[in-house]
Image 1 (tube, protein in one colour):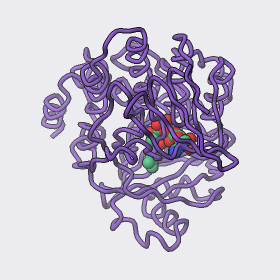
Image 2: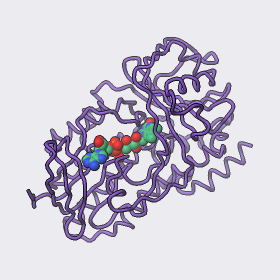
Image 3: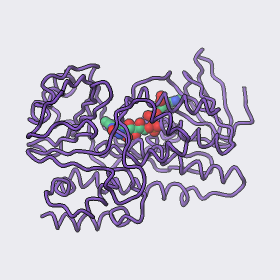
Image 4: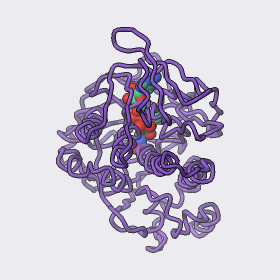
Length: 412
Ligand code: FAD
């Protein structure tokens, strides 16, 4: 039946949904989360950025996350041919946390959702949002576990459905991404790396390793250490570059690993732990991010690319920004959603966009692999790689294109 006393209904209990729910609850709002699946459930997006620790703290979830035993992370390593470059996230321009974790998202997302529930948030699992009516207050039509349809009405609606993209589909907001169509093939492995080395350097489990294909810089790999000797392993490229794509994903992934000598050496004893998965054309965009009735969070809005592991950070940042606007609106102050939510959120997304585009056209790779960097400049870039893409005091945020062009010239 109808439940007239709900302030905000949230579609999806991933990181953006759980953080938003917790923050709204803290602000004294009555919130209900509708989640299609039962947790834990698999999700890709396992390497977090330090910036998101601030948002986890805002949601009073830091103790729970710190205590969960996830793999510690303090930076990113990049490899191309015989070059091996480290970014230490604690040595950065922007103040704030410099370390974070790499997580199996099944466990991580369940922890955030359970913590929100302990705080008092209601989450309904196994229920799917099927349609939406915005002619008056937002009203959702929901299929419950028994297969029955019911409706929920709320004063405001948040879409945190990630790649489910519920509102973009139902409200026709989908807009093609201007990034090239790329695919990812990935799995989990028992890495058995032990004390294997690459170019005389031991593998650093505290950093994500991003390796560039030695012959084709459009192809890159992630190796993300997880707890218990496991790693997430994936390769990304335009579909025609990933040989024999859909026939046998495991064979294809292992063949791609063989083509990168450093990875091949590290993973010579690795065992594949789960069926390899393929995600095609993951980049997405929308025509509208928010109105006075709904806002899109995280991946339900724009998704760029996984190369800098920015997805969960953007998801949580969007939740924090949206909640501040909702709280004001529900308390009677009109909100200009374009000025107060979409534009400020997109500032950070656009920062990442500058570096993602320059990664694929090769310019940012030249900067990353430059062997004699200026320390101050490296700290500013490190801030962005650590997720602080909204820090306007960083020239590489505030004036990202111009600054990047300048150092591209310097690195030549
Ligand atoms: P999600 O975590 O996707 O949660 C959405 C939830 O909504 C799901 O639980 C789903 O079941 C639910 N849902 C969907 N439809 C409905 C419906 N109709 N009704 C009810 N519930 C519904 N990010 C990083 O930070 N680090 C990385 O290393 C990283 N690597 C990536 C690698 C690849 C190849 C890709 C494609 C992405 C990667 N990302 C990474 C991005 C990351 O996966 C996402 O940004 C992140 O999961 C977004 O979180 P979210 O809360 O928006 O959505």
